Amino acid sequence: MEISEVDILIIGAGPSGAVAAGYLEKQGAKIKVVERSKFPRLVVGESLIPRVMDHLDEAGLLEDLNKQHFQIKPGARFIRGEVISIFDFSQKFGAGWDWTWQIPRADFDDVMAQSLVKRGVDISFETTVTEISFTGSTSLTTVVDKEGNISKIKAKFVIDCSGYGRVLPRLLHLDKPSKLNPHSAIFSHVVDINRPEGIEGTQISFDVLDTEVWLWVIPFSNGHTSLGIVANTEFIDQLATDGDTADALRKAIQLSDFYVKRFAGTEFLFEPVHLKNYSAAVTKMYGDGFALTGNSSEFLDPVFSSGVCFATESGILAAKLAWRQLNGEEIDWEKDFTQYMERGIAVFTTYVKEWYTGNLQTLFFHRPENLDVKEKVCAVLAGYVWNEENPFVKKHNRVIRSIAYMLQNNKTLSDNIERNY
Image (cartoon, rainbow, N blue to C red):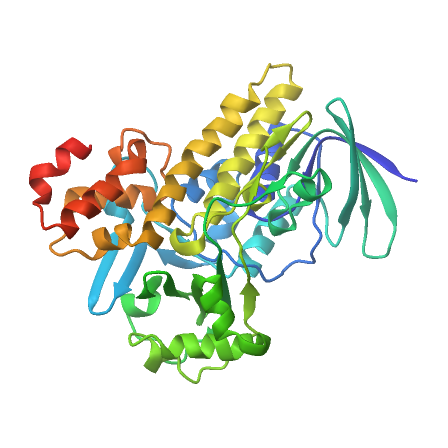
């Protein structure tokens, strides 16, 4: 049986694996990427946030991505009835990118993978990890290709970027329940034949139908638009009677006063996909000789498009730490990886929870807006959730709840805001 040897094995060629591989290729590491799917392939996560651009740049992927002319995303729009709240990334607190993209993930991921192949990165598509064993930090991974050929890969370190495949959590029994209440989604793409001109036809929007029910609308530059309904799992199950996801998504569109004329009767480009109870977590994010990144470790909720950001943040961080360790440095994985990632995850977890309690929606849709509050929230939505100079990051566990309470009780926000900072 063939046994190859590498410095670092990367499982998965999605955004997390791509930035990890891109960074490591630039350092001269001997790497191997194994990917279960054939690219291009359909996957959710079609709205990026600006923090992702830092990682794509550092991994050397921006040049080829820029050539694709993906839809520019300068911010996000939230709709509830007749009230519209727009967050402009150029008006956020602190430094950082002020735009990103809305992308068909099949194209986006494929462009990154082919860019890496051009740079000489060894990627095996349609190759499945079936077994892994560790001797200290050295691993031996068994893989099977699409023809059924079995081979083994000996690696000094493994970075699991397998996303929803959750390869190492499954093989090493690291899964645990999410702290978030169960939510589900159904989505598809349409040819957006009724797309308006201007921002109405290009801006990503979230139409809030009820506190726990919302529709996403993500226009792409190719004329297609992604439509998805997100709600508590019980609501989604009631929509999808007899497993008819197309009927469920059509019913969801009918619930939207804002979008029903634009999308009613539109044919779906593929059978709508049902993502059930999508939130996930793990008992630990690293071990001797491996690290878990992206959705293979933790996935929260699509409401603020944080999924790809956590994937690329953890992917490039794991690559940096692993490479430093292989070059003789002593790495404190608990402090430099787990605790770092958990700080950002905790911030977004708070915002997701407060969205579904309604507290964050109270803040978003209250009029008049407080622009100081809005710019600090905008920085969070842009993915800069490790910047503790932002009080809406540092005091995330109470500031949203406190402000919502003041607004709901008709207290003057400007007189009370400082004490919550």
